[in-house]
Amino acid sequence: MFLPYLFFTKILLKERGMIMRLAAGTTNQAKLQAIYNIFNDGANIIPCKVPSNVSDQPFSDEETIQGAINRAKNAIAETNADIGIGLEGGVNESPHGLMLCNWGALVIREFSEQPFIAGGARIVLPAYISQRLRNGEELGPVMDDFCQQENIRSHEGAIGIFTDGQVNRVEMFTHVVKLLKGQFDYANKTSNGG
Image 1: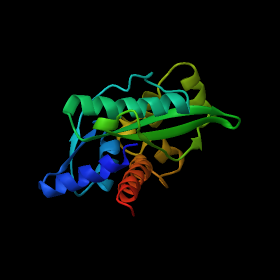
Image 2 (image 1 turned 120 degrees about the horizontal axis):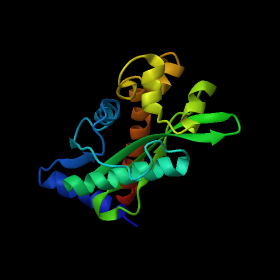
Image 3 (image 1 turned 90 degrees about the vertical axis):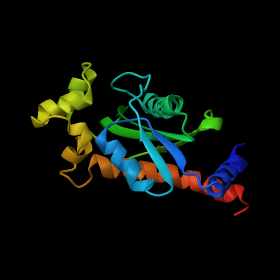
Image 4 (image 1 turned 60 degrees about the vertical axis):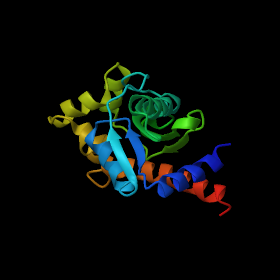
């Protein structure tokens, strides 16, 4: 188990006056803002465009989770950072209809096979959007077309549009990143006997 390593890493970085290097596996502004919202102290955040190694439109929780893990690992490989974070949006079939799903992964460089995983808010997508996705289109461009705006995914996202602005993409991914950091902090705390 990697818990002792986590505590050791934090202590070693503090003793050396070093700042943890965190690779953000994205250049999407909404996702980056979510990471900055939570890791706003004690981390040097390095944004990088990396592949998810899954389809452009993940169509299950499993594929979306794998995309988040892959982004975190690929970000570490690209930057040699201490930690990588990957955030991935997708959709998942349910008995109620096609649901928006969002997942995140936090990976520690030396323990990349043991990621922290967290999921975000879910809503059922309207049938006219779901049908286009089932026909092979990707949510981002579908939303741009539907809203007659460009780059919805970097701003309010589908979640913001279909909740009438009550929850936007930054808020949703901030919650996911908070869950990831909470797990990371808890692992550090318990590895220290706390």
